[in-house]
Length: 463
Ligand code: ADP
Ligand code: MG
Image (tube, rainbow, N blue to C red):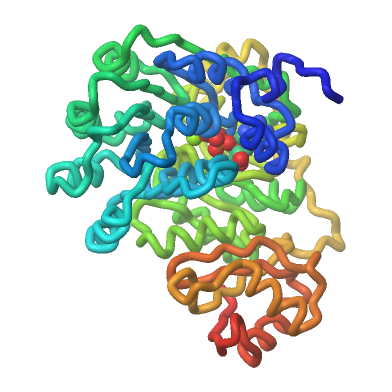
């Protein structure tokens, strides 16, 4: 079809190479937030854009900042502030994918948790785009290892979350180091007063684009179950064994609840992992890799820990308790049923939480669908719920110049495994993670340990 409709990227003033790259990435049409913000942002306007997680906000600011960029000028021309290292890395990856059309655009991530020393070396090599957390960016500004004098685009991503995390002062200081003449793009999942104040202080006649959440558009099936406090955590196992979703995100209101739930699920033989703030960065990476590559059935998290994570293919969300804020409930539920896929959202509510459910009903404009726990029966011959994949960790990563193709080659060409049996391959700095189908995990592991990757012997283990 050559027709250009309102949702086609073809309707935007983007160079042909960029259009072709979008096609290659499988971005057939704009998401609603992209359709609403790109024409304004590409016209150079300051923008406040609000839409839920997973709606494609990254491309909505990445394409305009790339359009503002002069690749031949070796200076930082765009800065994206993000609340956490993970989000910064996700944004960096998406920018790199979108920038592929042009050669030699350098994007650098600057976050806490990584040694400043390495960052200095990368900065010395020059970067066009910097993505980072406010604290570390400020650190580099005060050391004068980063200059924003040539900046033309400033992006505040997940602005609400950055304010929640107490970054308001840091953000103000970073903005003070930016040139006055610039385009500022602010993205947020919600629009609290703090964000409005931030915008009023630092933006020039910003255009506002807000997309209300309309879950009726997606195929999320919501069910509520009344539980006694003593039944709550066990009810999660009942739900999983009855509906058998391959990937579930379970939300708890407290870290303690997360810990208890993971212990109970693991005791039932369910592969569940917890995502919380006390994890070391490496542990956190491993948890996310395993969940994203489908070798962990359930990720148990608090709202803070899970906010903003780009997790595709989520079959179910479970609200282990009911959140006091109906807007948070809507966000949690919105994590499942992305795009054209159907998703389940289950909520466990005790008598004490009925007031909260009432507020959710009010906000959603329809009464909740209640089901009894007694409905949840696993078939008698059911095998325990098992994730389809297993993660193998290879000691060695980017430092050893390993690329995904090297690992795929070792498994398919050298060991004769089917490409279809190999899942996601994540190459981190010191480790590589490869997901393989459960049935071939032992064979793949033995083969990797006996064979070679990129001409070298490697050590591999099952996570
Ligand atoms: P948000 O920042 O709103 O949470 P992201 O920018 O992380 O959302 O996008 C969510 C996912 O959707 C990403 O995996 C991204 O690659 C994908 N995506 C974004 N825009 C499009 C599009 N127009 N077509 C298809 N996929 C898209
Ligand atoms: Mg985002």
